[in-house]
Amino acid sequence: MKIVMLENNETDMKRLLDLLINHFIPEHSMGKLSAKEFNFAKGYAWLVENVNCGAWAVEDDDGVFVGSIGLNLTSPWYSDTKYLTDGWFYVLPEHRNTGVGKMLLDRAKEFAEESGMPLIVGVFNAEDTESKFDIMQRMGMKVVGGLFAAGV
Image (cartoon, rainbow, N blue to C red; front, top):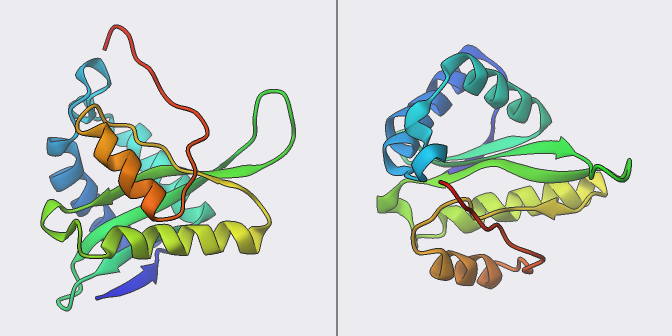
């Protein structure tokens, strides 16, 4: 397996869409925030924005994307200080616990460090959040807050 930086071209975007539409969306269940309410035009524009900022995928030996992370450049409402956050961070279920997620997160952390910006990665999923928090901490991330939901 190898990690590749994504580019905003037809080939990479088709492969990324295949991973996220055919695998992430059916798996992502968050009630009203579920990915099942996918708006293609909005979603595609979001993917392009993140790919243009910085995005990577891990390919298997057949060149199939088995995981990907995309970064978004933003700043807090109260400051012009820029930071990077994840637009998505997804690994196919059969490739979890194999190092794919770590490869992606390590590359995103390197990119943030090279850019001189903090990296904020969230766990935006209602299932098994404690183990996901544990995994993120084992991969060198520090808990700096949390998300809480009502009405979802």
